[in-house]
Length: 624
Image 1 (cartoon, helix red, strand yellow):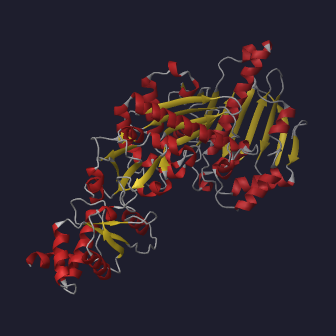
Image 2 (tube, rainbow, N blue to C red):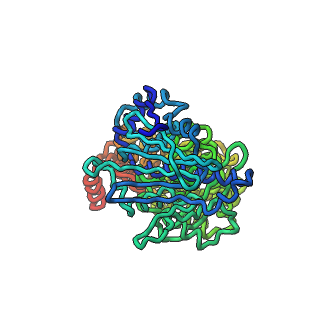
């Protein structure tokens, strides 16, 4: 040992922490290189700043860069920078003490989580990013020289809780960290970080947009820059061409289709961040798979942190691709902390607001493109109507619907602009398909009154419609529920029929008796004009489609009995009335009842419990 070489032992908590880091199985050991490159980038930033305020440093701030060197034979990986460097005091302060501001808290957190897989986002949170190198190295040597000073210092540790410090030499300011990698047989699932191809792949993934060049010798011994440094979001929008955006979009998404829309904005003030987001032109095949990657990447000061940051956008905007780069978030914040972070919630709200504003502009300025977007992603965006009450009206303003009116999609505001003066509600019908919805018997009275009806045929429509009671002062009303009063008289369709014969009341009573296990009531319909029958629910009844959705999700849903409505002017019902008038005990009455119920269920796209029995009933009746 030389005279100036000193040995040190970490404090007890730090030794525990280092041991946990070395021996725990991390979800992604590659992260150590990101941390070391990030530290080197910070050192270069500090030197550039010093050069602006200290003229004696100006000559040092030339050709600032980061250099990587690998030696497969010696199994070493070196990360060098020509940045600000450190003197002995700074070395002891920043490197010689692990997690100096939070050792106990970090150890407690690890103990609480257990000794299993530790998330990569935790590395560096308490100032321990440098020590992530011990995940892959059996010994680490750091040589550094502070800009403006002549002495260099060497820090070395085998990761056993001890380290040494001694004076060394370095021709220029900066820092070099050399990792003596663990033997291959000791690596287990860890990759070979002495392989240049693996090092290049990690740099492209995690450090591609670092503002300083990251260099490494290629096969011919020439310098090659590994990172693009093309952080488009840091440049003024006017200086970035469409071609650059398209290339960048392909780079981060691997989608060879051009994006339909890009959204770029910068937030300043108490919370600073940039967002560069893209709306794809085509929905991916896995869009409705619950665990699909959301596509929003999190960067902190150009350093890639997380590929699938689920807290930056609400789930109904999961089709977005792109990134958010923050200046304020603590580097490497844990996923659990992200969910509770006020800063992240601020970013989420800002991103959501900007995206909805941009889509609203798109709907006005480029109707054709917006219609194409809606056909790809509309059913996803509608999830926000029930999940995001804060932005519900904004989402409804940009939602589009098929209707019984003009061909093509329409907005609610356009629908309301076409409403007759006497129409006081927004009418809708839910259905399993658009064809079933447009041919629903529930529409007949509304069509006769020239009242336009929204056709809601997406499964998500069954979820958001119960949460919406009105839109801009107009009540949202299902044409398949409740009683119908279209003339505003306060009377139901049943009461508006011509004076009722007592025999009709008797028929309704016997039909209900025949269908007592299927329906609540049998009544005269105010909504039917040409069909013989339909089923109508009460205001809070589940629709048949919602029942089917819940059953498909494994829920035990009790059968919902609805009301059977019949059209007394239909020939089938008139024939039934005559049969019943002649003999109320005629067995054909019960058969007619079952047929009217089956026809009503089929006409709305529902199902019959016993299709074979229904088929026989119809066949027998036709034969007679």
